[in-house]
Image (tube, rainbow, N blue to C red; front, side, top):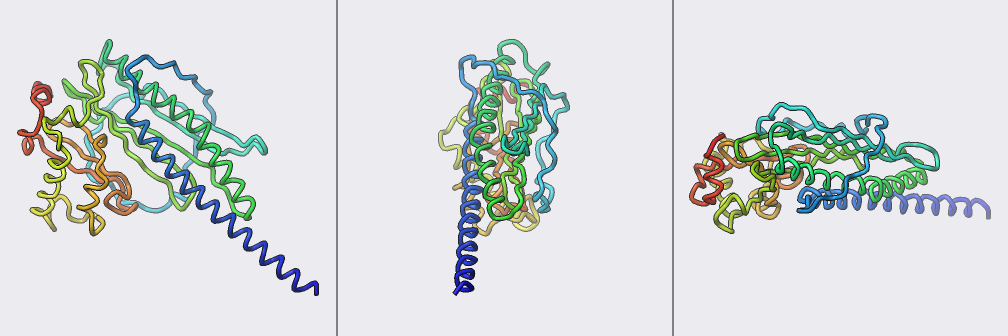
Length: 317
């Protein structure tokens, strides 16, 4: 009679482990979703008032490349040229499990340096914008994201698996420095469980005169700028088809439909001759295709651009 009982116990144990694994998967998916939503919100942060100065954490160990991020990805499409310059601040935060001292999460941020590119009130406004963004990000890392890492670590231990510490690596580049505008790109590489990490690109465009964030509504005179942009991308796609700009890209079959559904009006860079429209991983193409960008020339949409933007962009480059 004992043998069947042992078999039943083993089956029950396997079922329990399966349930725990399913819960672990759900935790990972929930983590990815919440992380993406929060970072998307942070990309539009930066209030009008002076925020409290963030508390600086002591520097700890440099994060290593997250294991599991070995899926190869081709070079992404041509991006705006990077303006050479130093970074204003690099900060590393390591959060450890109080139970065993093992790392749960490491986050490393390199902030943009706008010194010498803008001065006075404009520089202070941009600095306040990023002060607020990075303060909120830090609160998320040491709070919600660390809690999810702790849950995943426990789930892995319960099922005899291996926990890989979460990592967040954020870098920044000045991609356009014109007479009127400054465009800054922030890249966030995050590993929060699973087969590979995630990559998000955040876009900020500032007016040099006052340090204000420039929105797509500021660039266009029409409220329906989404239709203008999507029409330009679709027209060039149909004209160039197999030999033009979009040939060789590993898009979804319904990528033009996804252009509309995934359009994010904050994901663009101002450049000297064109806007660069950015689509994130999975928006219109598989993960392996990476971030997708499209150039929309000012000369092709000049009738749709606001008078103020035209005066500023062509007033000097």
